[in-house]
Length: 252
Image 1 (cartoon, rainbow, N blue to C red):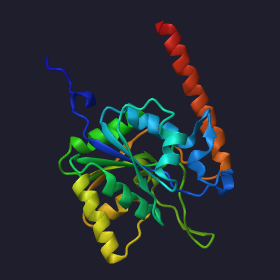
Image 2 (image 1 turned 90 degrees about the horizontal axis):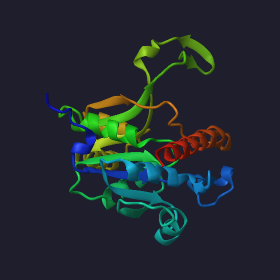
Image 3 (image 1 turned 45 degrees about the vertical axis):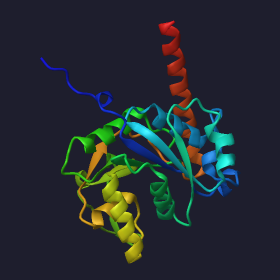
Image 4 (image 1 turned 90 degrees about the vertical axis):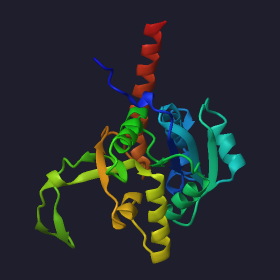
């Protein structure tokens, strides 16, 4: 019987673009919320560690509003990273920032994984699963980490309910969003030419006819948007740290 191939059987073939923009006004850090300390590290560091640990990742590009030296001193050089890290400047919009990240990426890599730096709970296994789903299906242009909707949804006019759609057709989209490098580059170029601003990178690929699939990942891959979001993030990270410490003790 032949062994089932795993993600580790493939050479690292993905550039991870971590977008670390966003205002830090509500979080008390003028550099942005990605630099607020959580469990002993800036928020951004937890995404960096996850992508560095994902076997599919060959390069990491961090797009940030701070200079390269400052970013390295406060978030990159303090980590034991194994993958090469490139820094790119953020743009006026998230879409501009992603485009800057694409310009700084290794063009020889066939896949690009775009991730919000404000999602610190992403797991290496979720990253690899999202990349693998794209790699294994030549009919796809992209895959997005997501979860099926579990709440009842309402279509409203103002605040008056008009109808209740079938929630089985709705997914809550997260990041990373993974694309064939050529597809996402073309999608961003078209968006610039036509003045289109999308809600996410998948929407840009979809509008030029790209086929994008949802890949179910852990539901706790939440995005830090307001200060109160830090409470569940901190609790989950503390539990993961404790679990890792217990596992390390059991092995010794």
